[in-house]
Every structure is written in C-alpha cells, then in structure tokens.
Image 1 (cartoon, chains in turn purple, blue):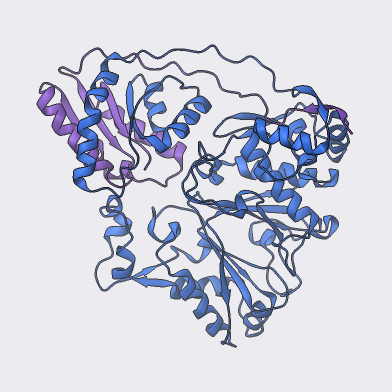
Image 2 (image 1 turned 180 degrees about the horizontal axis):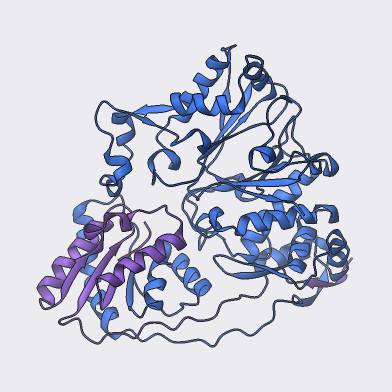
Length: 105
Length: 434
C-alpha cells in the first residue's frame, strides 16, 4: 500500500563560495616554472621528465624542482591545511609564474 | 588543496591527475570553490609502473601540459545563495522499501536500510537538544555540505537513533570537525581509515552504550545507530562516496558503521578512565575520537604475566604495513589505540602496573629492526631528519613517546585484545558531551 510522504532532503546545501582563480599566463618563455611533487611513487620521475622536456622545448624557461629544493614539501600524510599553507608559502618564495603539480597515485 | 592555496595567491597551476582520480580532483575543486582549475589527465597509474612506462606517459601528455599552462581559460560559476535551513522538503508516494530505493538512487543512502526522515520525526528527534535547528555546525568536506542541527536530527532519524542520543551526536560532530581530526583527509585517502569513538562518563550507562561483551559487534542500539549516523553524515552531507571522491582502495565495515564503544571502567577500577587521562573528571561525559586504519586482534594464548602479555602486544605493533610505522614519522599526535580485554588488563593491573606503565613498556619494547623497516619506507622520506637518524643495525621505535598510545579496557570475557594503528591525523580529539 502506498504512503504519501513528505521527506527531508538529507544532503544539505553546499556552502562554498567560488575562489577567484589566478590569471593564466600566455607563454612559458622566460617564465619561472615550479614543479611540485606530492611524494607519491614515481611522481618525481614524471616531473623530472617534464623538466627535461621544458628545457628542450622552452629553453628560456627557468625550471625549479620544489621537491629537490625542499624535500619536506613532497611528504604526503601531513594535515592537508597545514601542509597546503606551508607549501604555498615556500612556493611564493621562489616567485613562480606557474606551478605544475603531480597529484594522487 | 595545495594548488588552490597557490591559486589564491595569484599563481596559476596545472595539476596532473591520473584517470582514476579525476572524480576526486573535481570533488575537491567543487568543495573548495576552485572549479575551473586546470588539470591534465594521464592514464592510471603512475606509481608501480616501470620508469619507461612513466616516461612514455609524460611524453604523451606533454603537449597537453603545455597547452593547459598557457591557453586554459576557466569557466566561472555564480555562488550559491541557498540558505541551509530549513532543509528541502519533497513529496514521494510509495512504501518504505521504495523510499529506501529512492534515497539510494539519489545518493541519500549508503545502501543499508534507513528510516525515512519526515518533518514530524525530525521534530520529535529535536526534543533531544536545546540547540536551535537552524544552527550551522559544519561544512563537511569534501563536498562542504552544510550540517545544521536540523540535519543532525534528520540523519539521527535515518540511522534509528533516539532523541536522548543527540547531545552525544553533537559532541561527535564537534570532534570530527576539529582540525586535529582532519576529516578532510580521511574522506579522500586510499587508506581504509574509519573513526573510532570511545565514550566515557555516566552517559555510558544512561544510554546503554555497550562496553563489555561484543560492544563493537552489534546488538547495542546506541553503538550501532550512532556509528551509522557518523557515516551517513560523512557520506551524504560530506559526499565521501566511492569511487570518487571516496578513494579507499577497498574500504572496511567501519566505513559503513563507525566503531562506537564505551570504556569498560569496571574491569580495572584502579586505572584512570580515558576522560580523566584527557583532562576531565570521571563524572564528565566525553567522547574521544581517533582515526584508525583497522583492527588487529591480539589473542594472548599463553603468557600469564604483565610482561608476557605486553611482549606479545609489542610484537603485534611492530609490523611495517601500517601508516604510523612508515609514514611521516616525527609529527605530533597520538598514533594508536590498544583496547585490552578485562581479563588481560586485570593480570597487568594485579602486578601493580598502571596504564602509564603499560604505555612506557610498549614505548620501550615495540620496535623493529632498521633493515625490516626500511623495506617499506618511501624514498621521499629518506632525507627527512627523523628517518635519516637511523641506519643499518639500529632499532626503530614504533611509538615516538609513551603518550602516543591510547590504552583503554573494553570488551568482556576472553583473552582477545585489539590494536588499532592510527591513520595519520594530528592526534586524538576528546570533546565533552553537553
């Protein structure tokens, strides 16, 4: 037998305001490209190859491997908010024009 | 999360994500307001592949990486303006089974039966608290769904809780949202972590929370319904659902019904209960929340002395497949939980040992040879100061201090104890129950 229900949606509204994303750059020529690794296996191999390819294809770009400059930035497992704020502070110290990051597994 | 911090600082990013993690990446972006961030997808996985295999993936993806670095123009969305209270009401015609089917199809259910949340049942549930239903408690990650007191009551109805459980549910929410508990990471990790809640104080008996035989195995209404409530709000309001953004490789039952137990304070009355250890009086109702990886049963089959029992425990703690043994050592916070059976706890206490003595002994004796430990330590940690101080021939401690271990007595008759290694949050959180 059917019942006529009035039910409450248990999901809740999403309470997120959009963040203004950084403006894109139009070229990598003479730009500082910072490579960031999250510490997951083989991520550094991936990023090292990107560094090689950038030096071939965009030789005027300056490539910085953050994970070699500061290995602690590559450690996964730290509380996300603390690590994120700390890592972004370090990243701005190198004045990158763009960051290329290898994420997840 | 890291890249969004950079975007906020005016630095554009390109994130490389493997195909199995696109859903998680998109969920994190939605939950952080950074929809539109640039990312490049490569076939999963990168980890575990040969170097040649990884290089081939980079070479194939590189043109796209270059393009995204210089040509990406994100589409922007307008902010939401929906108020969180009252929650949406909707009509449905059908029986209870069909309500459950509808809820599951809409993502309002984890798949277990639930009680349909009607306005009348939620109003009745709200009699368990003096908090106003429109009070906003938490935006639960990764989805950042806004949890109000009304929604707590809604999920309490769904889980089959009673109104008198609401104060404990609210304290659990406070514990879960504590930055130390790091629920955000727990919801998106590949680790099968689940929360353990240990309740102390007179509320254990008042609500009938199980602390003795089978307390973690069902049949105790508050333990089961409250554990179910935890994963309902995490999965439905927080949106932590597999395959994305919930990425637990396999998961475990604690991801459906969290582990909720009382501490068995009657087995060894001379030992300080957990609420006292955590700075409260024994009469203060508290809930202690820990993110744990799983349960190791420790059957004390032979030893009849305190040292004999704890030597077996120490051996069990010293395995290399656990986060708290190989991952990011040297950070603050409690690492693990030992739930001693009353029978074994009595043997230990009768020899004059306190909980503090137990922790000290395990700190000194739970260790692992460097050569064995190093086989599962990721290269990224090799230059970390905490790791770099050990070398061949050394013994590596499992705990960084005696206080890294939570010890409590739980369960009934028998010699089975449970060791639960910690996931990797910043420690244990204890909240009073108001």
